[in-house]
Image (tube, rainbow, N blue to C red; front, side, top):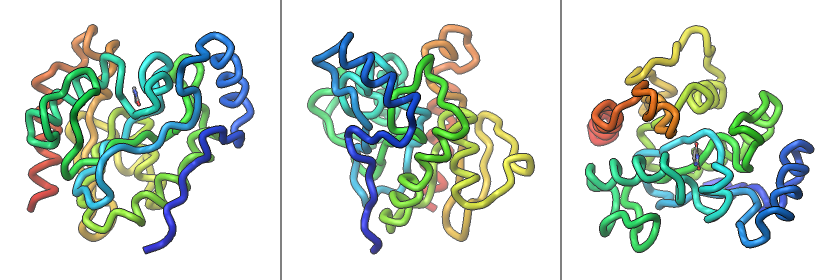
Length: 211
Ligand code: URA
């Protein structure tokens, strides 16, 4: 297996994200304020691929999706499908089974919007992670940025693999991409995504991963 390459906590590849982190360190000295790596086992069958750490969630806790509303729905849904040991209690006292959670961009971006260059700079970390997950069968992408990132990681054309809730594409032999609307507070409040829709897409991904 190749060596797993992870960004350093104070990675400074992206100037805009480095400046934003420095500002956040002043404002929130107790927060993690660094690149956020993965949680979950490397022998997972499914990878949950988010967008980027939320300022008041992963950027605070240091763990992807822990501490904000999108994470509450994500982990509660993973729990319903048997991917957690123990109940999900606001990020504490649970571990993941057979699922690993990560983000397309590892550092918090201003307004939750990474630039194309920032997404490109982070893609080698995703590729290295995939190369180190021998049992990976499905990447479950949350939102269009994660969807496009997964496609580009495999050299596939974005225009030929349109993002839709519940879409399913083959990335390479034995590895599937299933995508969902992002479980963000905005999408939930505007009913673009409901809890039922999210459960159904994750269930679809789970079925593919156990085939
Ligand atoms: N928290 C994350 O870690 N990623 C997201 O995409 C949203 C919130």
